[in-house]
Figure (cartoon, rainbow over the protein chains, first blue to last red):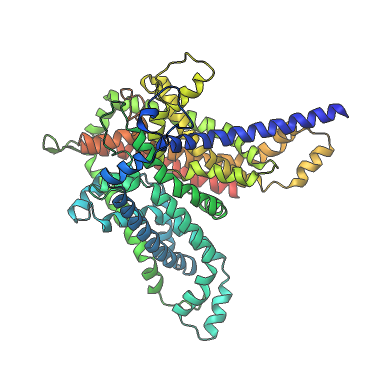
Length: 281
Length: 291
């Protein structure tokens, strides 16, 4: 009996050590970024690291606001990510319905095409697309960036939404049609209300992946800076440490905080979305 | 299939916006990349002439490209190796019953949701010899420890792979977990009645049942590894030398910094072909497993 108790205790301990290790490995670096962002520069570049700064300060944030134009960057990010989500959801809902409810060789081929393009790496298309964007005067414009952001979320969104429409029984729509509903009425009154959970899921995932999009703003814009790019563009202050870690950690934390809150709130939808489409943020 | 949606043009109108955007952001540029790969285009010296397959021959004589290819292979292999081993381990942890399981599942999503570029630039500092997080933690146990991780080839490579794992392993584990949840509890009960211990039931039940699932996951993850860009861009800038410049980073350097467009296109075409082979495999494998 005592032997069994010891075994149980060991098992319990082992389990918790594993869990705490995982939590530590994930949370501690994030905690370190936060602490660095509120540590004054003079304390930051010392050994060993002081994980509880003696004189916490918001100086780095103030510097970012005054000298790096933080608010404009947040504004740019919100405009681009916001429009991306609205337009991509509208376009992809339409397309998902089209792909799910109509069958012809051409439509199936078009759907196959959208899915195949999912695996084309951005770098393969980058240079010609850059030159094309310059030629049509969309380089470094909000419109151009939004189009490219939308493009990058299309395959995943269409795939998830199409699968969802397919699961809605067509008999619902047939019943509505018999009652005299037009095509648009069926789409808006019958299908769309049922799509709400799927739409929420793709919006949440697309919000995260657009926020994380680094490649597009790096190569297709110059003056319009979003948060993900500006973190590598922070100018060196003359502190000779090679990397303005005080500012970078502050900028990093500004990017991370909304993401962490978002993940905490929408954990379930994110899990659903990941499992539905195998997204890569 | 249905007789209520009869007009032929309706579906095309509905899918048109999506189709147009994808056509113009993928098909046209890929066509141009193929064309450019046959030219020598050097914007800095104003060269633009047809050279046929010469780029494709030159690629294999270029030390920088060979260094990139070497690291890309190392990176993909080790990253995937540890993805599988540690991913299954983490999935098992997430599948255990304990208070706070939901909390752990939530925080595991955070690295997945973080931008790679933030992770990369934080890692650049975390691996700093004097003020970095990693050495600081080591010094708590070995006070005299001193090492510049990102200056030496093997440790820089290790660091890049470690950060890649930090970001994507939780995501991989969650996907494995989704496969594990289909295994019914009764199978484990039956095994326990027959006297199997935890390790045995893992080897004989869990592993065989998730093996196909894990194999299917590996292909897209391998493809993503082959085209990784953000982390190297922000963490090591390909250094020391060219030792951590992944192929996608190499291409972007040739295309946007050295402005050697023809050459970059040739590398891009070769990457594209490798990707196409893997994608084809992906479709074949997932078809076979779903049968």
